[in-house]
Length: 290
Image (cartoon, rainbow, N blue to C red; front, side):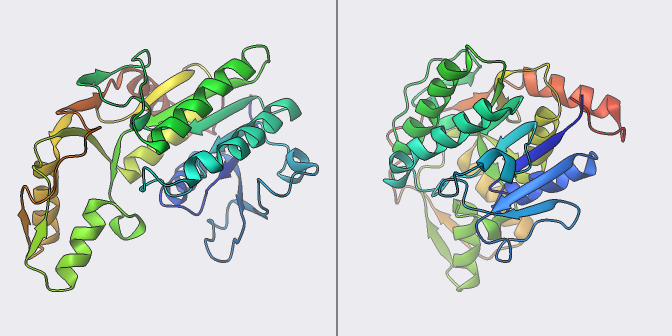
């Protein structure tokens, strides 16, 4: 079965890479942005200018009556306790509910490792969630609400639980971009945490490949960990970044405490996403299908 993929947040840090990955697979992509000129999508994608939360009249039809809604849009994702996470949660739920009721066959929604909260070790789709930040609480609540609301419908849900994203550092607000900016200002040291906590790091381009592959199939459903499955300490990964960039800056370890909701080590179980990627690779350059 083929159809249209609507991508929200297509001009964002992750969205731009995801649109490229979908188009490379031959998908029929529609992007929606409040200001397409400020964040243009690739020319091969159909672009719609709209506010998905405010422009509610005939919203589904105006957005191209998509078969798949890939919802990446979210504000302040790097500011974990920003009030906007809870303030806009009802709008996200209303938008996705409307898409499902209007005829979307599948909702593919961006989640986060922060839904899980404090957890030591590997995270599976069944790992209990106890979020400890407003960002994690909002994402977790959205997933739980969608699971309840879609249970009695024919609309399928795929929840992309993403871990620590790196790469394209000028386009994000991560510690990597802050270190690069500090080095550019001529600073020789960067105040840092202990750096001992281990995370699951994944380059944004690889993440985009995983998201596109998940969105273009309907065999692997529910929570899908978008991850590498390999734990690496934050200090090791940042030191690697500094070496790769040839930056003349050193980490000043221990200047900041580790965040209380960060565990000594947390990483994703990649079993499901590897299954999807293997099938995606087997299809090669064939037209996208799901």
